[in-house]
Length: 218
View (tube, rainbow, N blue to C red):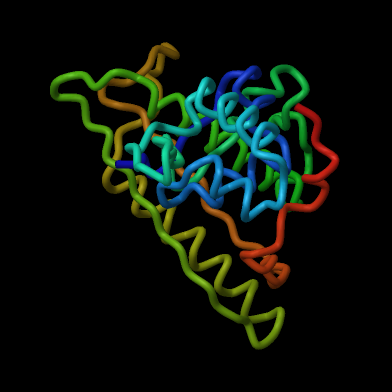
């Protein structure tokens, strides 16, 4: 069974993944599929498709999903190892976005950098071995809404900020002791933000190969 998410934290794996043709192969491999079927759908030579399938399997993005007889040969089928993939912001190292270097806390850049921090934190959390008694509960909230005018937006922002501060003060302990040492308990990080969003671009038809895939070279 495929994992829900594969956090890609290794530069070599990221390099193996970031190819339009390989991304299209993974999209088609959400259900078990053979290299010959991929070749037919992508209208590419089977030898070329086989090369990319082997590279994806070697990097852990494809898993073997059984065999089937077709005419006088046995075909190996493959399936994507996960439902989706995430590139950890830690791949960028020292040049990655850092919210501490952005002065305007009300800017889109600041929120984007915070999101990168959160994504890196969660990737690290997923790779840590489970420890008995360790509480790793996660809270996620998502909502979409509109404001009739700027006054309503500002009022909501003030009320939300006050409510969050009140709830945190009521239910948590200070993050640090007076001497600067960590307080007891498991530390948590809360990131809360809202932003105007633009509609997503219309999805590419499922039968259309990824742009530029024919220019790929084995």
